[in-house]
Image (cartoon, rainbow, N blue to C red; front, top):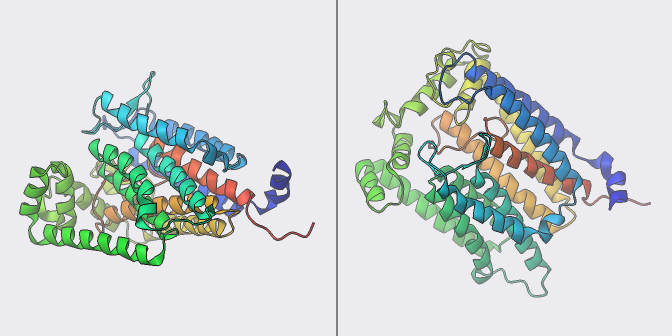
Length: 390
């Protein structure tokens, strides 16, 4: 295998690595300018130093995963998945942070977010199940054959929803659908899409036509906490609670609009400098980028994301086996949804769900998981099919 790596090293996806470096530069600049001179107690001390340390550790993790044979993940899938579930249960032992049991606090002041790791472990387990099913003499692609996937999904999904972390739970749901799209037979896919469409249309219509009644119903049935239902209502009508649940999205929209074409310049954004957008270094970091760098600067970032997704798909199409292709399919679904949802909520075209912008927002757990996912893609690229005559 090592000889294969040496022969294929020139086929490594170097454009993908370059794109990741450029996005990391965006991240450091955005976090620095969004927190410079702020006295907000919610901002971690030495935040830019912490982010740069996490960046370095993430690149180390990425390259380590790149040189590791991704098939090793298949051998330890149950251990990886089991530990992830235990960590999701362990979060409830620790106190809430911003109203949610999402963090495990470590000695020395650090913390990890198990829901971030649960996304990657679910991708690994599901990819292995799908690949092994394809290898059977009589593979079962019926709804019965999909039952283990649904069970593997529902356990972490309910635990994450219980924290509560609606955004992370939705990402897990999208990951499952993204992987099923490239796995199931067309007729089963049509059924899944139809069910999803009915649920989304029904709920969206109820929120649009009967906002107050929908809030009361969701809270009475304990489906969602009050603040989450208010976020959904504010997405339909941001002016419904302009000083409450709609405040953050309205201020972010103002920041994006004030950036105009070329932006107000680094450290010159009135909304960013005035701290009008809460938690701008995490969930709403795109508003800081758009205000200071304008339409041009933020469009360059979006193009970098599109190139990243394109390179990932290209590697998946030349994967040595189904396992590698499914691993990448799950990661593509994860990144695509998070990017769309985060940028969308800054533009008020999607609800605010607490989803961070991959590779850009502040956060160690998310950064490590995201770069590990890219490391898996690079591992597949080192071992993908190539036409050789030696």
